[in-house]
Image (cartoon, rainbow, N blue to C red; front, top):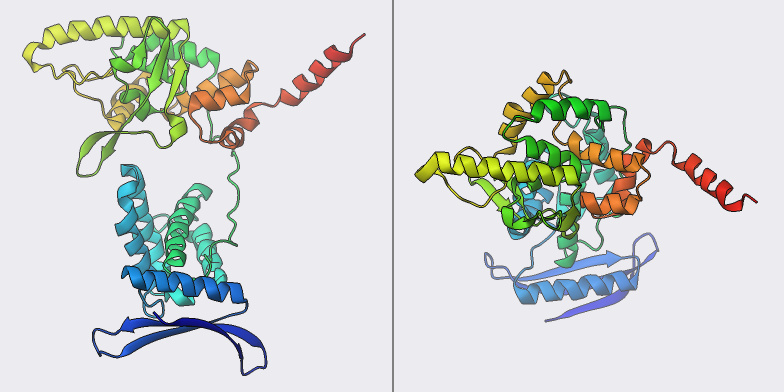
Length: 386
């Protein structure tokens, strides 16, 4: 395959490096197709030439002068969506349909500039929610950025772009806002545990607070994952509802989510009582019992849906306890808050929560540690007291 890089002089007198390559025969006209592209640096020209030749040889070449951002992002999705978790697939498909295609879909891939992408994110930040007319949250903006970044990376690998136009785009950092994390106080937990005591899913409420595990992780918990003697559970899967498939047991979102969590004694007691209650339900259900090995089930052994648990168990328990509605996820925040309030090491909290990076834990919960600096100063005082 023919290809070369040569130094040329442009009309304005400046110098550029032009990469030229024969990309094959056009199946429609039978004519030879050639592609030329100018670069300010020789190294960029040589890299583009090498990736383009490689793509042509693999039969994966597409003319970036014709393909649009929308077409290429959809191509990325068709190639890589299978490697995403179910919720990740749904989120990526939604991001493409709702945000990328309407604003950037018709733009030629070869014409995309960082300024175009920056303007795109600014529009999303100000009024990107079509339903409310309000701007997207930082978290939603990051989901959009992740999809575009991966698609543009693939375009670079295919030789259609020399650089990812998103490399220079920086999104605002998520700030912990008042009310975004609402942990229960110890007094509120006492009221909640008291009203949950007689509920068949009392142990689920206890474990949500005692382990900080995500709701899907607890609902995906099996008895094989529970060691009552050693007082620990192993998080190895998450139960998720997938559109068109129902409830699906999937591996957690990251390798750090696969973890073992030591249990306090009150959680072990709750699990023992729950197992006895479940055995009684199994006997009562008889042949109708569907044994999937799950710790938390319906009265006939089938797995529980997180949405149903929230609506039919969690909210009614909060109401009976005289507490305002809160997310089930706030039990996870409560776990972190209680540990940090007791002076637990942030790294231990990260490991129990299954965060991929301790920075996520710090970013989410640092505002719950207002006395940490004072405690550090007091420790130094004690160290150097004569």
